[in-house]
Image (tube, rainbow, N blue to C red; front, side, top):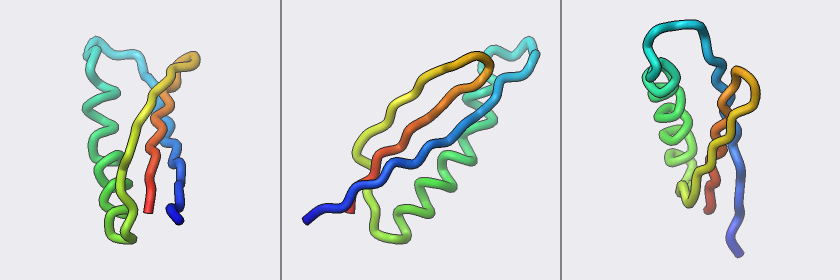
Length: 64
């Protein structure tokens, strides 16, 4: 029987002229989380994002 987990990462926007600052600043944190789960035998099966106010929520769905 497969196990499933959802990991939520939250990143907050800041005032800047760089419209890609969230993508740039979140890459390392997302990759670190993927590596952490991969070490424990989890596999990324889906992702989703949503924005609310000045925050961006990234959902990572894993299975084992």
